[in-house]
Image (cartoon, rainbow, N blue to C red; front, side, top):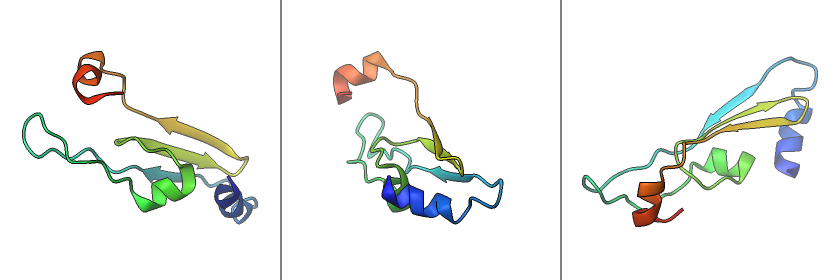
Length: 80
């Protein structure tokens, strides 16, 4: 939160938003994913570990995360 607050403090005079994307999930084959390594910028600002997410950060300290829909069948094999 402190990191995000420092960044937002520099944007307070503007009506800008920061849009940051997470790293995508990469596959070794059709069904075997590589271990996920989050984008450093995304991890630094949000701390959110899941792939394929997008964060929108507004100067009023509003954080909106867009994440993948849950897939119960994939969770059985890969975990939550």
